[in-house]
Length: 163
Image 1: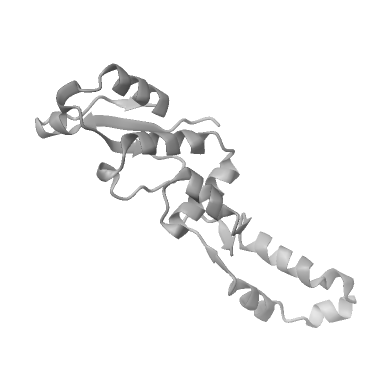
Image 2: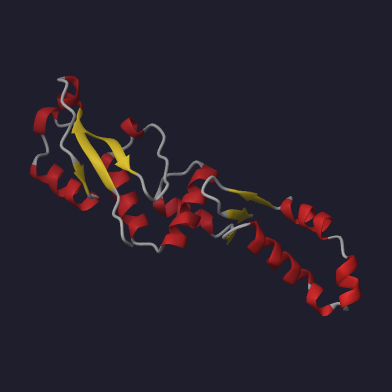
């Protein structure tokens, strides 16, 4: 993975005094920084922003545990790009922002890169390639795909989820 997620750390005391914070840091650097300075400028740490190239949207960022967010980001960083996208789709679909819970929920889904890949899998499940070509020409693919699509939906990041 070429890019690394970074967070902008601050403390509520520092923020209330009008200071912007301590700069962009990786999750590992953030943990070390907090361990070295647990009570710095008010001591109650929060993540003011996430350099969000992986596409995770954490609502109410100010009210989440800094360490939980850092663990989540580190866990996501360990995954390959496709696995990240699938897990983020599960998180957004279920409004869950705990890595272990999202991994557990991901077992309920089958993931597809896009609608075309999903439709190909539907055709394979039906076994259309085994039918004579004349039948395949007259098959109503539009209606078939529409019926298949009732079981699937597209996540915000483009991943197709089938429960």
